[in-house]
Length: 88
Image 1: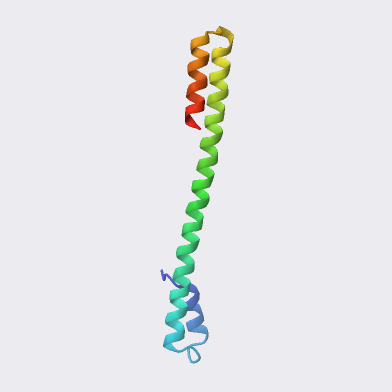
Image 2: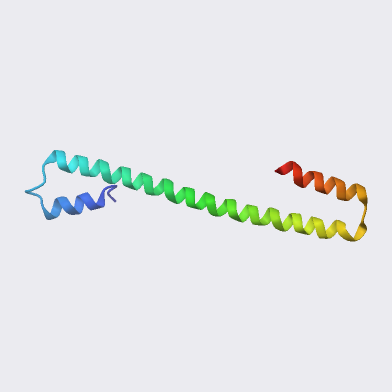
């Protein structure tokens, strides 16, 4: 499969009108566009993963708060609070 399918299609459609330089520049531009789209998609996936992990951290913090609340052990509360603050 070609890495510049749009330019290949344009070349076939207008063979006599497209010079070699125009074709090469068009292929370069299409490759750059494809690379940029790949980077954007990777960033979107990272953003989604980051959000998922932030939500997981929040759930773990809430679960930790609920786990220590009934016991009212001052030391455990202090340790848990310090651990949460340290991650900030």
